[in-house]
Length: 62
Image: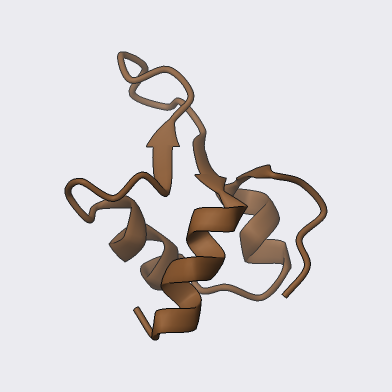
C-alpha cells in the first residue's frame, strides 16, 4: 500500500480507513519502532507512525 508520507499522524491514517483500536494496539506494542508521540512528555501530543514499519507489520497480519 502506498502512503502519502514516510511519517504520518494517527488522524491521517484514520482518514485512510484504519481503525482507532488497531492503531492504538500498534502504538501500545512495547518495543515496536512503528509509533511514538511527537513529544513524549506531552499528554496530548500527536501520535505519529513510520509508514514503512507500519506496512511491514500490516503485511505480517499484526
